Amino acid sequence: MSEIAKETKKTASLDSANNSDSYKPDSEISKTWKAVHSKFRDEFGEAVFRSWLKPLTLQAFYHNTLEVSVPTRFMRDWIQTHYAERMLEMCTEKSDRIKRLEIVVVQNTIIADEINDNSAAKIKSNENNKSYEKYDLNSPFDQRFTFDTFVVGKPNALAHAAAMRVVESQNVPFNPLFLYGGVGLGKTHLMHAIGWEIQKQSPEKRVIYLSAEKFMYQFVKSLRAKDTMTFKDAFRSVDVLMIDDIQFISGKESTQEEFFHTFNALVDQNKQIIISADKAPSDLLGIEERLRSRLAWGLVADIHPSTYDLRLGILQSKREALQADIPDAVLEFLALKVTSNIRELEGALNRIVAHADVTKQNVTLESTQDVLQDLLRSHDRRITIDEIQRKTADHYNIRLPDMHSARRARNVARPRQVAMYLAKQLTSRSLPEIGRKFGGRDHTTVMHAIRKIDELIEADVQIAQDVEVIRRALTG
Ligand code: ADP
Ligand code: MG
Image 1: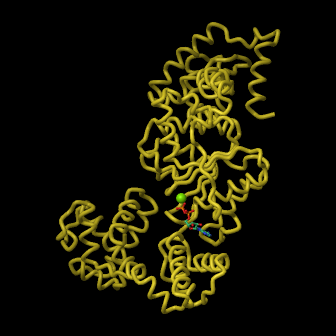
Image 2 (image 1 turned 180 degrees about the vertical axis):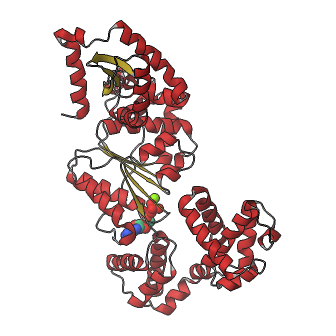
């Protein structure tokens, strides 16, 4: 029996028990609770109150224990970890009869009505047995994206292992599974692989994969049609829900709200959820705090940028799949040169194979360099320190001469350090050369700047993003 069912039953049996009077809160306790509950708003703030604490309902009082209920298990856990301690304090201040606070899950409270038990939605779904067909929620899986074709290496080992766990587990091993990493590193591939595998093992399961963009589009459609209940209903019978590129709903508040409720309802029903994004949950700007923390609740697995070994492995596996006759030297050359992401690497390989096909010539190192001229040139493009200084000054809205000046004010010193850091990363200049370009500074100053920015990138999301944006402007 699930935990929810157990607890719901427990409360139900309390109610029906003959001696239920001894559990029923007396008027003094009821009054105390009412007074304390209304104080939560001031204590925890309006947003917290509305999202979490408002639905709290007094259920029972026994052995100095105040029992209150919420509609979902997730809410209970969240309130337990974040607010329960202070809540109890507030109760005991009011009445010394209260010594403990017990939060239980009872599903038939207000919010549960909306999510789980909406009778209007039920009637609708009876009329139209597969209400979800009204909303186009399912995207087909790509034939190429299976576990068989996914090459495992150090950068993606954790994400791959997590995906396998989801597939192999009888129950839900962690919820959600959150996969994140840069573009073209295999997030979508892994999600499709999970989908294929679950479908193969359990054809009766309903697996839904959709991009966050599509989720939003369909949701907005349901809003317009004043039909959000059918939309919600469409997710009710889902066993596995996968949402790709969740960063897309940044700043889209009502979509986030809807997603949050869908998410909680599914987690409460113990349904597996898998999410992907380009950043870690905590770094997703424009996503509400409560959703961000919720996303990090299960297992967060990142996919790192590829290594030479992984790229070579992928190329070898593709060569085999294509049954193409390509010399090792060509694969090694590509693995060395095309480092941006796997998608581009695949594109490069496809191009040289296509070229060989059309010209009926063998693939050689020379023909490869020839065919990929434009691509390789863009990778080899020399970035100068002047350019880095200009782009960095632009980004921070400071004057270019401040890159060379002796001013130490933080608002110019920090951008200068960022520029030094990028100069080291993106050019082959030595530390003394870089120092000279920054108003004749010493190489130890440059070294200090690089260390500092390295540290800040770890500690400060804003700096990490700044550096990334400028880097892209320079290399993109
Ligand atoms: P993302 O969703 O992270 O942007 P994708 O999953 O779309 O990236 O991957 C981009 C391309 O690279 C796809 O064609 C995918 O098959 C391929 N790819 C990525 N990682 C791997 C891997 N480890 N093994 C094989 N192919 C991969
Ligand atoms: Mg993708």
